[in-house]
Image (cartoon, rainbow, N blue to C red; front, side, top):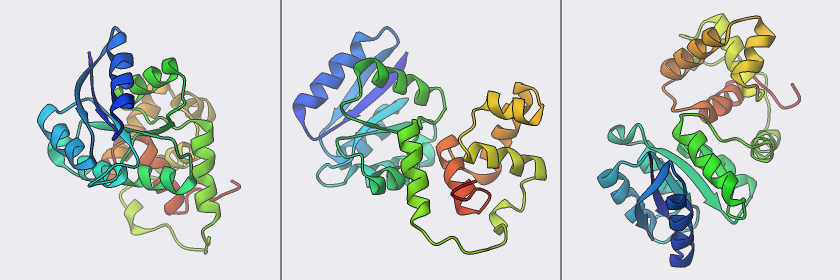
Length: 220
């Protein structure tokens, strides 16, 4: 059973999400938060599998609440799925940098929202094509100076850098396996080791690392 905490400052929306989550056979709501601060507190108390987090909330916004939850070692297994009426680039980038595992707009069809909860609960990143495009657009607006691979990747092997590059280009594990002529199990092992070496939570953060370290640049 996937345990879900709902954080939104609008009671009507919280109630709607609550009903939707509990209508599923494999999900249930463990709490509701009306502020960012309350979301952080309830995450610590209930330790949900997934937090549905609104962006704009009083006391703490969803991005700062996400940063606090994802930065708490006691909540290392908690995943945050950002929900917002605002599909703006800066929100996407800031949410993923804060540690969110995915980003959806609130008009997402109910079935897709439930699918998103399952994907994130399973430890994967929920990066839809539109979100990935926004992320790439964010980097496209930034200067791209020539620079050596940063020391952050010093412990990453050449093969792992190759895998990380393909993750940054948006490839799935199956696509990477086919591209590199490796088994799917081997690719999963590489991805797991990269996550551990870089001390990041999931695939969403790997995409950011790939761009920020220069392994992937816009247009590659």
